[in-house]
Length: 108
Image (cartoon, rainbow, N blue to C red; front, side, top):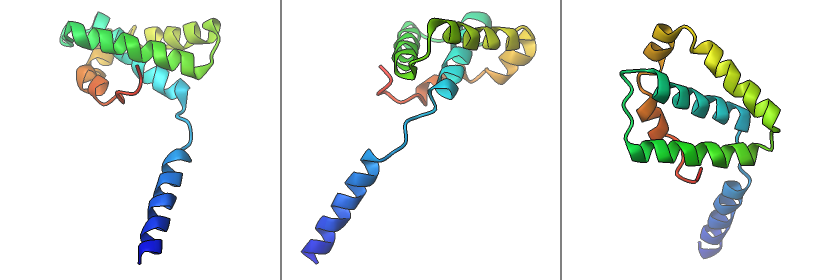
């Protein structure tokens, strides 16, 4: 019984370390959308600490992604072009503050 428990703990710990790396490009797209919504959508009202948390998460993920500055600029530009249809964009991003709350705390 004890050996089974030790094996189960070891296997679950090994599985935790074997998690694949996040798709940083997708994470950045989500963070950039939140950023644009914070700036552009009048119904999205983040607090100062939420702004700071978002900035920290963006910095962390940009670094983790390993993408060059040009690639990061292109990703952000895609989101800005998407937001050109502001009413539709803001309707989809009305829950931007809640989306930020779902971002892992480890992205700092």
